[in-house]
Image 1: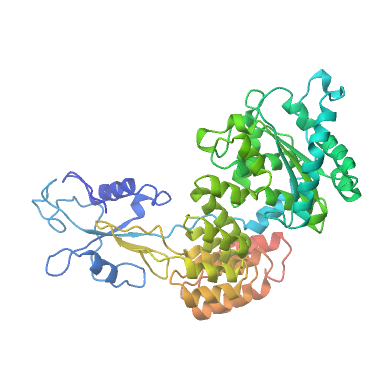
Image 2: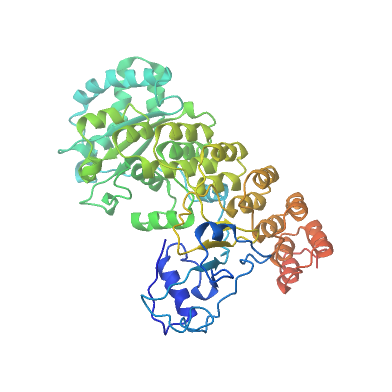
Amino acid sequence: MISILIEDWNTVADLKKEIKDEKKNKLKDVDADSLQLFLAKKEDGSWLDGAEAVAAPLDDRGNPRGFEQMDPLLWLKDAKYFGENFTQGEGKAHVLVVVPKVKSKRPATAKAQRKKLFNALEWREPMRLCTSDGQDWAYQGAPGLVAELAQPLVAHNEAWKLGYEGKQNYAINLVLDGRGTGKSRMLDEMKGLLCEAAKQSQQQELVERMKNAYVFRVTFEGGTSSTGNLLDSECPEFDVSYRMLYQLAKDRIEWPKFVDQLVESYPSLFLCIEEVMEILATLEKIGNMKNMTVILCVDDYASRSLPAMSVSSSEESEYAYREPVTWHHQKHDPSDFCKRMMNYYASIGDLGRLRWLYDNCDAKYSAEAVDGAATNGHLEVVKWLHDVLSVDSAAMRNSSGTFTELWSLDGDNSAVKCTTAAMDGAAMNGHLNVVKWLHKNRPEGCTTSAMDEAARNGHFSVVLWLHCNRKEGCTTAAIDGAANGGHHQVVEWLHQTRSEGCTHDAMINAASKGFLDIV
């Protein structure tokens, strides 16, 4: 519920600005002038209450029927709306606000972002952590460490082969250094130490694994590198994963610049250690993950972590034998981490991990989870999320994507199950089965972007279905996009069936790309 105090000499246009300022997060992409205000007053002069506002009928344009739109040029004290005696603290009004649907920039799908990411990566041997002149000297601590590592290495390998917790698919050896001198040099030598320890086991399979292992070295050394700055102080795996990817980057750029580029270019990317290992397997053309071994050396994390995420020596040992997500959940507040994981796993269709997170985390699913799953065609995930999410929305959405809300009442719309982006995204990528299911089971609908994007990508069956079953229609962007992609059948059908037409871009782009049959 919001209450706005405003001087009587202000205009309705000024009230729009006050509403936008009050709801600046929700209306951050909306111009104040585009808001449409309707005086929520009934014929008998009484104000509309919350229930009546929700039940108010909408016309074809999404505006509340029977309520006069307020002229932005009129003063608030104008008798037409508030009465001549309307003054601050004495007069009040209930106002219905219609917010236009803002067409956001079309985001790249998670699949497209992943493909683009692969082109920027390659396997690269890690840089040494210790770069002193003595790096070529024989490592004095080797004999003692090899003897200490031999038995734990064998036990760790056996636990992985037997499929103990967190070790079903990934052969990973995690090494965390403690405080003290020589720790960086020890991590530099770790692969050689593990190879020698494997030889003592007399297990040839283990020897070959260590010999062919891929080594990652990530550092949180704050005194020598900006990599010491934490991206997420409550999630060690998140920070470790980004640093692993940093090692794989083809272009050697500074760490802060690398992080900025990653966030800007791949907004749907949510990394975990397993994901980076799968990326590495793809880069190295390893079909079976069980044939790949990774030695992950993490330098100086404990001294950089904040009190809320401090890592004791006992936790360092425990972390090495547990699945990172499970370990983090049991040790620390998981809500924000789990929410991001839920959204990511929904977008890639990993229902198994989604179910685990649902059973073990307190975080609530967001609309982004359903939108992402639908956009990428994961119908089973969409259905499952539909069953577990709760409905808690006071917003009324109509076919054009606008919503009407009584702003003088309390209305928290944060728990909506999904948005129009779900059907828009599914249509864009040609997932007709998802579009049909959303149409039948969800009230959010879609926008004109659904048909526009389906046409642009040549999904003729989706365009036909939307035309026959939905009323949002399309814009000139439909033919423009279809022509640009050379989709002659779609262009011809839109021209013969729809009335929106096109712009000059359709002919120009089609001609420039050689689609003369369309021109």
